[in-house]
Amino acid sequence: MPIDCDADIVSARQKGRELASQCGFPTTDLAVIATAISELARNIVRYAVHGEVLVRLVEADGKRGIEVTASDDGPGIADITLALQDGYSTSGGLGLGLPGTRRLMDEFELLSDFGKGTKVTVRRWKR
Amino acid sequence: MNLELRALTRRYARALEDFLGGGGEAALQEAYHIGREALARGLGVHDLATVQQGALLKAMLGVRTRREGTRAIRAAGKFFVEGLLPFEMSHRQSQEANAALRESEERYRGVVDTARDVIFTLSSDGKVMSLNPVFETITGWSRAEWIGKDFAPLVHADDRARAVELYRAALTDQASPRFEVGVELGILVKSGATIPGEVVATPLVRDGKIVGILGVARDITDRKRAEQALHHLNEALEEEVKRIAHALHDEAGQLLASVHIGLAEIARDLPPHVAQRLADVGGLLNKIEEQLRHLSHELRPTILDDLGLQPALEFLADGVSRRTGLHIVVEGSAGARLPAPTETALYRIVQEALTNVTKHAQATRVSITLTRSGRQLRCTIRDDGVGFDVRAVHARRGARGLGLIGIQERLHGVGGTLEIVATPGGGTRLIMAVPLEVDRAESNLAR
Image 1 (cartoon, rainbow over the protein chains, first blue to last red):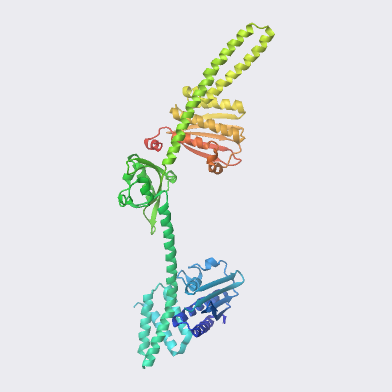
Image 2 (cartoon, one colour):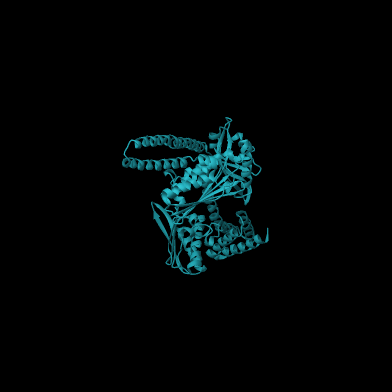
């Protein structure tokens, strides 16, 4: 799903919620996945202008789960460690943004080449 | 309910209405945004519950059937979950931060508990607030015996005034170079003995205010013992030097005199041209005698005892100058006679310094300057040699650091201080300051 504006975020959330619902996640977990998509897509709109969010079901070691990948061709992140610190960028020290997303999800991967864009992958497993 | 909360509730209620009217994901996202905003404005979970309650009540007012009622309650539940998620993220952040803080506190505790120095805190009215376990090992007191008590009785009566001074300086955050290196205080232990401690203190700051002091006290018994041993060794060395000087001057001198008489007697029995060769040998003997006398004087100059530091230094400079070709001047004035230990110490230090200059400095000129100001005598030795890296030389203390330890020990013995100004390639200056009237507190240091 391409992410260019706030309206795209809404559809990405919806797709994520639908897919997670098919997978059998409880309602409260659906909200968690929608929130992760919101936070990741928000970063795209804010810093990269254009990017995309990919949501898919995954399976590993007999566990089923959902994976959200947000990628953009924006300026990239110069210092990943710094970006994952609370209080840096949008989260304003409240623990939101990338660090907040990391805490909500089971797995979190961040790839960023400065100047070549950013790719964040998060996963949540069904319990 | 305040205005801010009321506005949020209206927005939340509107979004809930939208959702019930088929607003779908966009309405859910709005609930999430409201939660995010509430968090950013410093509102809490309880506030969000109030908003939720208000919006649900409003939604229920429009309900006509049981079915609609169930739908509204379900929707409000979904909304609440969305709105709470930003708080959940924030809450997890606090948990992580708390865990990190706990870990760091445990590490700190571990360091304090296993430290070999006493780490203590005192309140702003001088009460002992905390002590680490090693306090019991070192002093024999139990910590409970001192927590909450005034700290002063722990310090030897002679040092108490200085302890209070150190405490006050730390409490008012007055960084004094005098206290930077630590203050030596006698600490009273349970057995009734006094052990030498070295104490440093810094202000204890809580919420931007100084609430007491944090101090570290080290048991320096071993160091004191080593210093004392060195001191005794120096004294023994001085005695030995006296003995050798005496042997050189008096005993060897008398022997040489006998040799002279013997030679003169032999010369009388010899033909003149042979006697002349003997006379040449006699001349050489005279030179040896002269050199022996000079060496003996340098070792232990009677001139130091008889005439004082300045003439003795001039005599020393003259001798070194003649042997090495260094141009040495003695300037300034020491004023009246100084206490014998001070004169001896300074003489030995200059001697050691001149040996250093000869061996290492590749200098051509040396000046020794004495200045007296009030109760202090300053002695500066300056050369124009290659200099050295002070830090590097200090770092290899074990490896006979240019005799600097010896110089420092001698100065310490008479309450003096040493400053070295040297740069590689830029010459060397040793600046020594010796108090001329050692006050009681200072002399306690050497106890």
